[in-house]
Amino acid sequence: MNFPKGNKLNQGVPEEIESSAKILEEHMKKVDYKFFVKSYILIMGLLTLTIFCFIFFARLAMFLIP
Image (tube, rainbow, N blue to C red; front, side, top):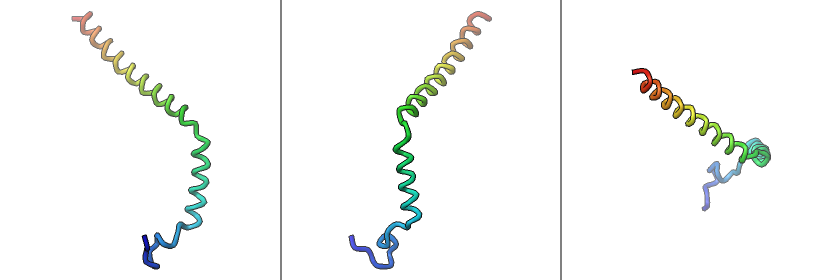
């Protein structure tokens, strides 16, 4: 696609943004995504377990104390 000469897309990416993108890309390669996924699943599981335990004990209390 041919852009007009005054178009900013035709001028390229500024140096500051390009260097920041390279630094960000290097940091993203170092991140352990499996740890984050396991942590997320663990937190969601504990939250779900807590909610169901609360419901269970509330119903148990209503059953035992008429």
